[in-house]
Image 1 (tube, rainbow, N blue to C red):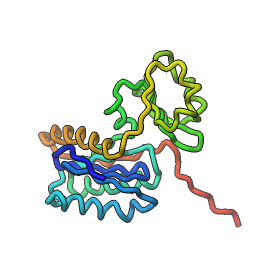
Image 2 (cartoon, rainbow, N blue to C red):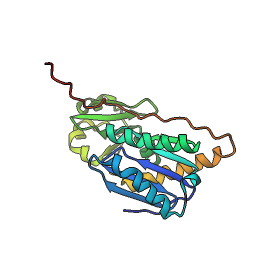
Image 3 (cartoon, rainbow, N blue to C red):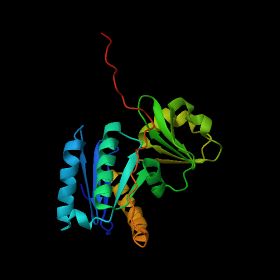
Image 4 (cartoon, helix red, strand yellow):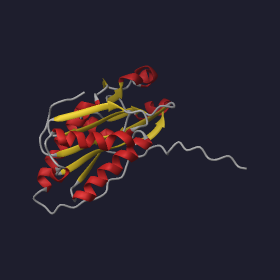
Length: 218
């Protein structure tokens, strides 16, 4: 799948979910990843750069989704993004899933994302995001608040939304999110070109720890 949008030689990487998306200039590419991001991400980026008739040295910046999302996927995406930044001495811009959604719904007071296992990833206003049980979201809602929730959560959350004023039900396609990331990152990189370029590593937003099974005692 591809989508047309922005020019600026900024590379975009989004490995937060099973649908991986990358973008560069006027092209976004996405594909379904099943535990194979570490194998396909770099080859797909190389192919995308070639399709733009560019070399890696022409990349001016990188924007990357920092999460929350897949633990392994985020680790792969951030490692690649930071690798480009370190190797080329270019800025790396991190955007959380909440930052990206607010580009589409800037008036949302609360953003609630499905964290599975009966839990939510939630951000209220500009406060730090957190993970919480689905059943406790209602305690954060004040009368008249505007709330963004993924459409798949409407049944589980419906009883808790009575006080909400505006409810945004949406599933924003990954390619549209990537296009928005590139647009914002391109503006930031253009402004930073007048200053000394400095690479600063970006860290992932992990709201849930890795699902690691401890070895059985012998």
